Image (cartoon, rainbow, N blue to C red; front, side, top):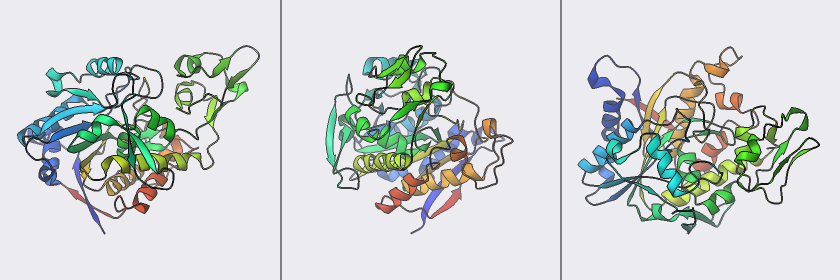
Length: 367
C-alpha cells in the first residue's frame, strides 16, 4: 500500500513561506490534528543536542508544534531519555540544564520538559514485542503514560546505524538505560594501536572505565564494555572502530524493535527535519558541515515511508561538505559514504517494513 509523505521545501519569498509557518501547514496537511483530543498528554520527543552541537532542531520549530497542540486543547510536554554514555545528558539534572542551555526553556518553547526515565535513567518498563531479537523491550517509563507521541527527528548521519531519523529518535532515544544497553549489546570496539595518539579522549568519555591507554598498549576490556560507541565518536584519529560484519544491521533491527514497542497501541505523529544534515549524530559535542544542502521538512503517519523518502531525497541531492568532490552518483547512499562500516541505514527501513510498521512505497506530496 502506498503511503502519503508530505513535504515543506526550503523555498521562501515572503514571511508566509517561512519554514516555521510551513511546519504548521504541514501538520494540518498531514491530518495530524485528528490525532490530538482534548486533555491528551502530548509527548514531543526530540533530541535537545549535546552542548557544543549546533545541528539539532531549533527551539522555534518545537514551539510551533507546542502552539498547535495547545490550540487542539492537548497538554504538550517535551521529552527525551537519559544517555547511556557519559556527558551532559546522562542524568536528568544535567540533561535539563543542557536542554535549557541549547534554548529549550519554558520561556522559549512554552512547554515543560519531562525526562522520561527519571533522575538516573532507572525508570524503565518492559513492553512485550515478541520479535526477532527481543520478546520484551525496556522503555523509559513516563513515555508510556502519554496519549500522543510526536517525533521531531533530525535526519542526519550516524556512526553506528548509517543514519539517524525517526527510528533512532524514538527507539534509541526513548529506550531506558537498560534498554539502550540491550540495543548496543553486540557493539565491541577495538583500538588500532598504530593510529592511537594517546589523547585520552576515549578514556574521558567512557562511562564504564573500560579503556586503558598507556605508552605500552591501548585496549578496551570487552568484559565490562557496554557497547555505547562513545569512544568511536570521540576518537579524533578514527583509531577506534567496530568490526561490524552483521553488527550494524543487527543494531538497526534492535532499534526498530524498540520503536515498535513504543509506538504500538498509541497515536503517533512522525516529522523528519532534513536540515543541517550533519555526518554525525547530535550526541556529538560538535557539528561538521552538512553533507547536502537543506531539503526541508517531511511528515507522515507512516514511519517507514517517512524514513524511505528522507533517505531517497538525501541520496538524490548533490554531495556537499566532507563528501564534496567524491565520486558519488545521484542515488548513491551518502550515509554509507560517510560511514562505510555501516549499510547506510537501509536495514532499519527494510526491517520496519518486514515487521509491519509501514510501507516503503510512498507518494511525496508538496504543500
